[in-house]
Image (cartoon, rainbow, N blue to C red; front, side, top):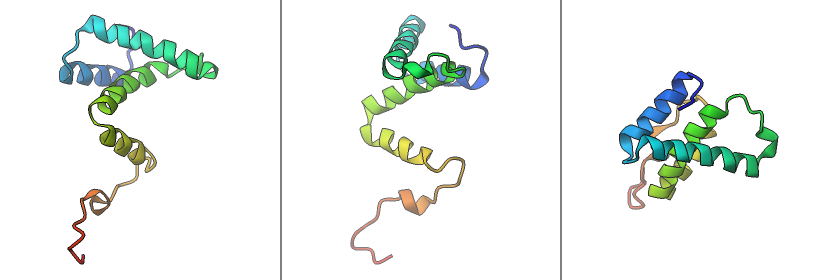
Length: 100
């Protein structure tokens, strides 16, 4: 598996393999498919230097999206906040009968 020795890519791939019942060979297949999809959807990223990290993240994100579409949307929403703190109250379920 060529992850260019990037610690975050290795950690992302390891976390995925730890959480999802998939073999290493299946993960490698997903990794290669991710590259093909990137070339088809964004040919200008053909030389994207950090594509290893992109692929490992995309594989994990696709799994989250498949398991829970709302969680995937929440991840996309959270990405808009960059490294800023997110208010817990923003994410808590609001009871419409509660005046607070």
